[in-house]
Image 1: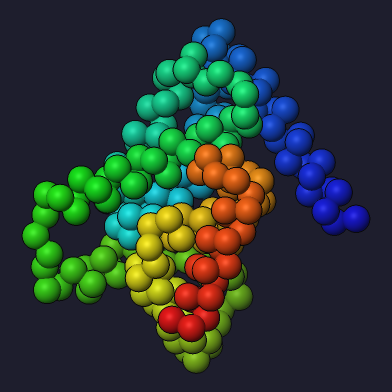
Image 2: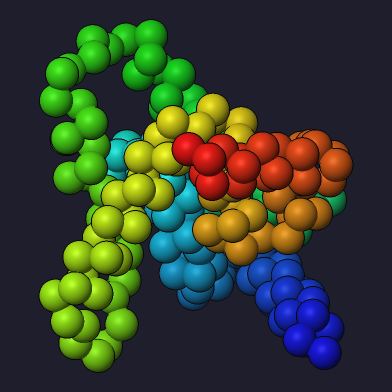
Length: 195
């Protein structure tokens, strides 16, 4: 039953997105603002998980949001979110490629990149110091493990297991088959477990 309600909610969001996209194409500024608010946070999270750097993620997010100004390029042959996530992943990977070819590696790089990552949201109730430490350690382990994953595996893991996209949505974002997504996800999960 839960799967059906999730599918319905996803379909409802996709339908709502298309209505907002059409309104944006007609020049509706409020619709534009609503789409930006709906996706800005997720775009940032995806970019930050791929680039491992807060400033780079902000750059990618800004580049992805500029796409809103070019909505005429959206051919509507996929969900709007799929199109937007694909652009964000591509921008993130481009950012990494540019850095790889143009930068020197600092001895302190690992230390600096951990500081650049924003902490995950903490629940309202006040956790005790032991819970804080355990949560901090788990986040650090996940960050280190993600950093060691190959880009192709990392992107699939982030979209599927962190962002919660379905296998089909992930395949559409990355322009892969569902089988390829499942294979990469299995390899990424195995790597995360065995480290």
